[in-house]
Amino acid sequence: MGAMAIVTTQRGRDPRAAAVRLGAVATASVAAAWLHQNHDPGALCPLRRLTGVPCPFCGSTTVFMEAGAGHWWAALAANPVTIVVALVFLAAPLLAVDPLGTLVGLPKRTLWIGGGVLLVGSWLWQLHRFGLLG
Image (tube, rainbow, N blue to C red):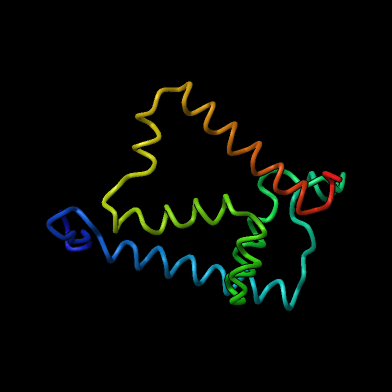
């Protein structure tokens, strides 16, 4: 390993990797909030822009814009699934887990069912958030 290798603690935890990830997410969030405040690009989702109907991933950009502006509840309300994924991504080095490796090790049926449940749940949340469920 070269000089650039990240040193981990005895349990395989890597606090520096978590700090780098947190710094990257914080920087992206503040940049997105600034961009939105100064140059609002409008809806970025092609489905929502063309039809007015949000996709399951709608709100993901808003999560980072709201978090960058310090509006934590608004970020959570925009897309809870994105918050969970971001937290897993940030915490993985501290927990000494490999989320992608864990997912690859699951049976394909479990991945399809779990992914489907997440997508449907996220889409129902977005449809509710935009008042399209009644």
